[in-house]
Image (cartoon, rainbow, N blue to C red):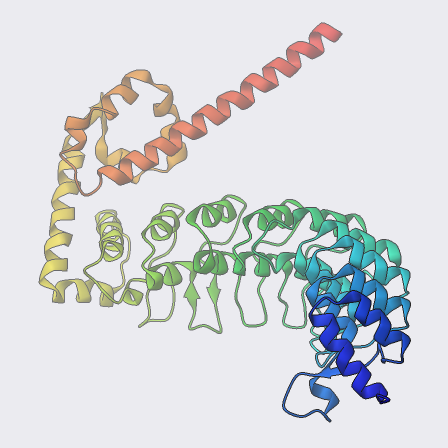
Length: 427
């Protein structure tokens, strides 16, 4: 009994799925079509739901089967229902020998999927530096952009794994770090959205604008608060991020609004320490108003800050003060903060310097005090700090930062002195 080519091809599929390589060879010799497409949905007639046999072999990561199909004329540039060709799929295997097989068969390097993703961008998304190098060496167009304007650097940033080695390769080949897509989204925005800290450091180091805004008015500090750890927020602020920037298309929300909405105590503390304006935003949507549960530590952090502001005769939003007065618990906490501030002004750490001074002055002004051993010992005396249970932690963090800055400055000075001494010796 003679079998049709279609029947032989279906038998070939069965042999492939069961890894019967010799039977597959025999079926191909007797006329099975290696470029046949396998129906994977209800309709066997609609090519939209059919997959080439070569793609099935790639999915199974079977090198012998892939080679068999290629050697017998399988169409290496055939695409599936999402427009991906064999190279797109080979990159999902993370097997460079399979990739090499397809490149030897002149697979189309410029192919673009239905979603607009090139072969190069697929390799970047998979995070495989060797695959990226192979594809670039084979002639992939590094300047090709996604239809939305995304560059290869954007795709390198769209990952939660460390892609900096790929980013370095792209940068060396001329891909800019700060180009925006059609919505003005830049690689830095994506790195922050994907919480990719190493990529964020890389982009900032190589000149990414830390205050750039997207079409929807989002900016790096806003995204850092929303998606990242407080250390990332601090890093951006140290690099010059505008702390009181607002998202015009998001109800004039600032980074502090988002931190309060998320009730992230660490981020609220960092932003306040760096000088975030608690009154910024629309008149009825201050950062404090974003805290849904006013009995949380986040609300207490904001109230502590308001007390300090009031004590220094700085403006505090009237509606925020009214919401505090309406709550018995919040009002009590506010009064406790006020009483503690009064005590802090009275008690001295060392000589004439009060605890209140440590609380309100900028950390840079504390550096000379951090160099004074007598002051440091007196400040670290726990029994005295116990008198200020509300503000003690804040003072300790601020003084610790001053100590770190002092040590850093001393290291820099010693390095400068060492370099000058070496120069004199050489002279």
